[in-house]
Image 1 (cartoon, rainbow over the protein chains, first blue to last red):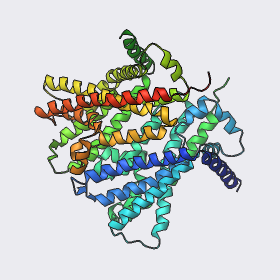
Image 2: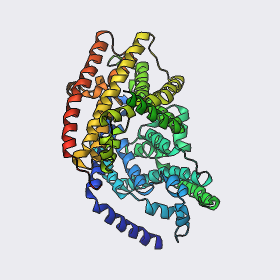
Image 3: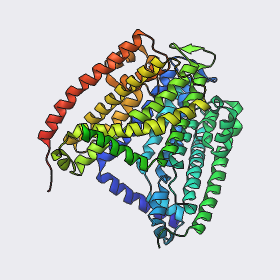
Image 4: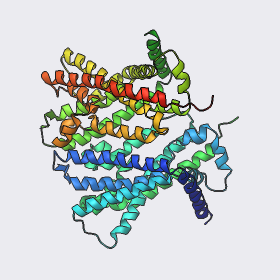
Length: 261
Length: 263
């Protein structure tokens, strides 16, 4: 309960500061929209030259992309920890975090929230609805619930990868560029995994589960029965990887000795 | 002239001090090239060629487009904006050199560094991983080099233009981001221009952006032949000259507009 009130207090503080600079907020949203436009234009142009991508139609690929945006937006809003090493370890900020009465990771998350990224959920939903309508997808009463469940599962899987990598900072504060690399690998999850070779497919499923952010969960709503097992595994994979990441984080915190003298 | 060469050298040495950052950069570019490689393979499927490019040519196109980007890409628009915001531009303006010329040379120093420490090793790495086809003819290499240099100039000119707008808008971060998106789309980095629908191609014909990525990459992949190459290089050169005009006009206007706060 304490965690929930803390969360809402930080959230209202955050809103106050952000709404002071409305112009910046609008610029950020528009540039996010522009980035998504580039990706959509790519898909549209490419499908001017082919009917199917490994058996997936244009609207199915757009659906996957739209779905991907939703867990990704959830992830970017709350797990904005790509610069954890520089911001907290190198500068010694982690010492301050450890004196706080809540779990260290939760404290970091509260401080680094970026709620404007949640706008991506809206963009994602619009794209999903557009693609879903042109595919004439039928919706069962339980589908919206599964949709939410899968989106959260995907966001957890995404978050787990980045938490685990941020934890490396506890062992070595050397500058690594693994984070930006992960963002780029994450883009692999936006397309059907069957276009990749076996090794990459394995990696995206079991090692860096980016496929559970886009293709696998989206496959359920597209009625691709051969992927159902993976679709329904999404929340499970999300929770398992997230718990593993927390374990690594906690181990790292115990190991942490501070950067000061 | 000497002071400009010194500028190139300084920037080169500065970059050299942080060279380890670039090894991961090569990996990131390779990851991106890999994503597009698989994607294009799936797009080609059974087809042997699309819009005159075979699938091997397409892989080569993607590889060279990204690796060439390491050379022509720079952040001088942001640097200019920052110097204006912080008021440093006042000092820069009384120094005995042309401010814009100096920024261009800094960009070139950066470009030369990345060419040798990023593009060349990156291209070798990518050639080992993916099936790509480099030009056989030495002349193609020469023409590609020339085209790449022109692409650097065009991109830098556009960056200068975007940077100067900070004189008028104070905060031009949005404009800089929009510019980046436009260049990604219209330069041919993510999609060869010939893949776009005709109406879009017709518009892009009259824009300078394809001179940045599409033309050098097409020369490298043998997508252009004979007369097409000459025409493309001419097109790039014309844009280099044409873009000087708005830079000149905007710069004169900007200097009049400039108010330095404090002292």
